[in-house]
Amino acid sequence: MGMPRKLKGFNLFQNGANFVGQTKEITLPKLSRKMEEYMGGGMSGPIQIDYGQEAIQLEWTCGGFMPEVIKQYGITKHDGVLLRFAGGYQAEDRDTYDAIEIVVKGRHKEIDPGTAKPKEDTDFKVTTVASYYKLSMNGEDLIEMDFINMVEKINGVDLLQQLRNAIGL
Image 1 (tube, rainbow, N blue to C red):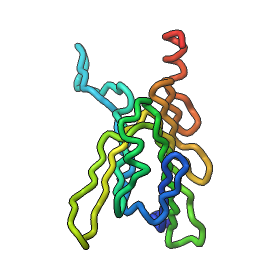
Image 2: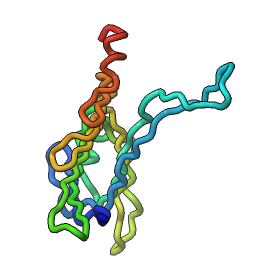
Image 3: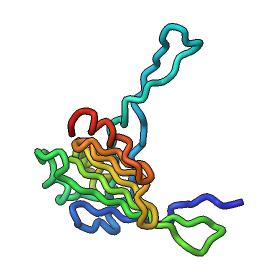
């Protein structure tokens, strides 16, 4: 029997800038497939047709005003902002930590600087939408998705290679 891996610490980087001590919370990207129900003649029940990955976003909260983030608002390139989450996860039945890294490239969709109230904690919230996503564990790539280049690698296998070939890419 094994114990679950629990997050013991994390850090966030934006375009290489280290946000140590500034990031309070991160909602990591949800992985969700776009599926549609299909039932054709002669079938006894519906199946779900997989149309690929849904949109990916990362939501994060900082403890105060972040001018480095404000400067990135309205960036025109779909991958103009690079965010890297580095987390240390540990199971209580081990002495070692697993290094979990999530890299997204995208742009900030929403920046919420919070309320202005003197001598009160202020949250600075950011929603970043991504055109690129990579999840690694201990240096091994588990998932890599590059929407613009039609790449979807799961455990080293590119699920879209044959489709790219079929459409001449």
